[in-house]
Length: 67
Image 1: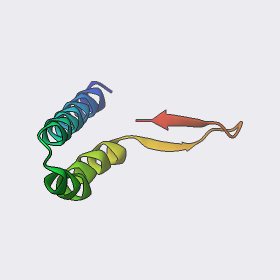
Image 2 (image 1 turned 180 degrees about the vertical axis):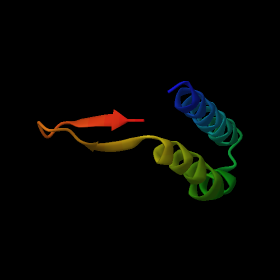
Image 3 (image 1 turned 90 degrees about the vertical axis):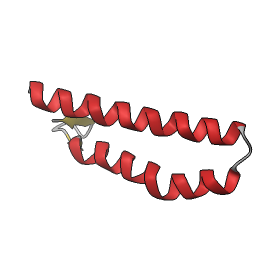
Image 4 (image 1 turned 30 degrees about the horizontal axis):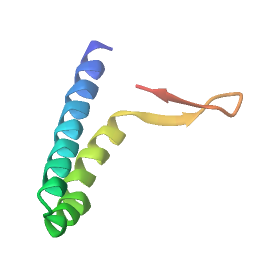
């Protein structure tokens, strides 16, 4: 379990850094760069995190994250 927690924390940190980069580019008015980054790099960072966390329905139909 500790290994998965570490993987999630690393993936979350990388996603957070990517979002900070988007914020910085938006503040500088580099909209074309932001769109390119979001469609490519940020999407990959999100998918990396998504692949670590598998969300599936529970017995009562609610969604819970399973590691």
